[in-house]
Image (cartoon, rainbow, N blue to C red):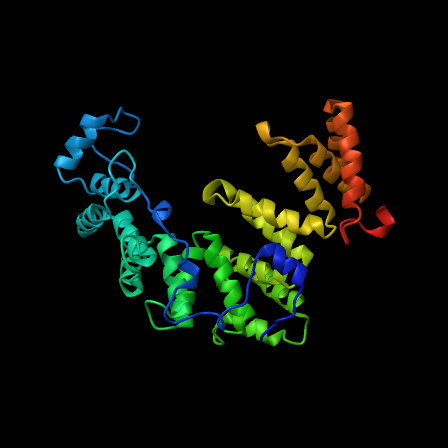
Length: 358
């Protein structure tokens, strides 16, 4: 079931794009722009030096002399980036290869990055896929995501949507945002597996508008134990519904990411989806965005905070009115007048405030 005309403005805000037609067999479009900045260092673990103990140059040279795989990998990153050492891509490859042979996960991932990006030479996507798989098999979500991209695009591996979904799902269950978006894109393009329970329900709801159909699948996934859904599945279907224009889904998605923020660092994604819903007039989301602007420490913006809290308060969110008044008491006269001007400008944005609340 394909939906190609869903809520263009919202799709722009969420940066979801079409899948399949633009993929090329000879180039990994999703891996373009990858480079040395994507390389990862390993955490140094040594029984003789507990966490928090000083780790000076002598400590690292002792570990390197003992053939410590993590230190060897980190030396490779330094060679690749030219950090505190003359840049030498050949030595970086050598370090990563030695470390990877000692089962160092980050080294396998780094070799994937080196081959995919063509650092020091031409890209070799087949080699990149092999090394990403090495790290993916050991549970690295970023490698699982890249491998999913390669199967979806048919670069470095035969195009295989089922295999792409397999790796995306493994990464998505660790709350990898890109992997969740990748799954959503596949379903939006009509390429989801027809035999999965979620896809079956998705197709069964074909008579509904796509935004509502995807939202119903998300609600089905979120009903609790025994429904064979991982919480990340709920995120995927809410993402699909939000991309198709369902504002309630955007808000629910923001809440879902907020609940997992402490463990999986999804706070920025939560804020993004609150903003999507807030821009479309969702009062509670406007309140959350107001709170966000009001609690950013050195980046606190009382002008933005007041405007969003005012929008929420005018739509009946009582707590927003209380916080708005507290913000006013801290504002300078200049900030208050700036907030008034910003509010007038933002009121011109279609949908940001229902007519009856103006």
